[in-house]
Length: 63
Image 1: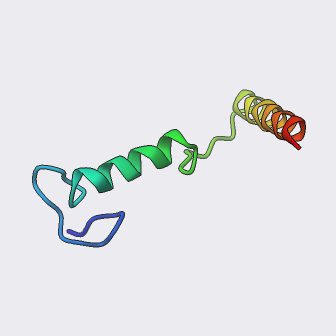
Image 2: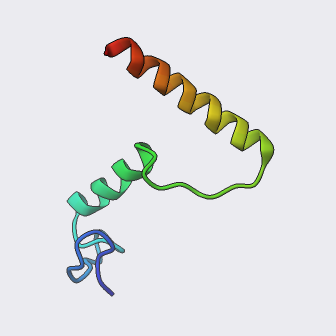
Image 3: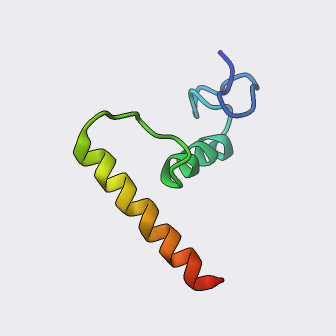
């Protein structure tokens, strides 16, 4: 099995990753929202739209 981040052979101590570094990269991607589980729930869609509008408003204030 290869590491899903870098493709190297996995390490049993960090499985399914090759190292703690790749595990941390994967965790950061989840925490930053790079990975997402798709949903058709209308409440989830509304929450996502509100979050995107909040980010856009915050970004506009910076420029």
